[in-house]
Image (tube, rainbow, N blue to C red):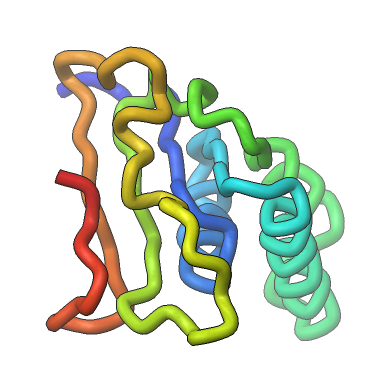
Length: 137
């Protein structure tokens, strides 16, 4: 069985940042991608905050947090996950009416500028079993 070298997470919201954090905690490099830098920064901030809370609760040591954060990269460049072994699309099944009507992650495959590697696994995770918005096809 081959080793996972890199995982991409499309979406920097609560679900995407939580998935990215857990992947990094397991020792795997992860790239979290979203459409706007403000979304990426919000996701990275969520990860930092939750890890700091873990330090305060004595779940993590500060040096563990540094190691975890060193495995997380945030970007708006969808090409950054083109060479990932696994790409996870984390999207809301119930977008808020105030959210801008953008393609967001639903077209991330075409945003990669080249197909994922032949051995890459692409999965879509939504917040419900009956999504109103489709995942990438």
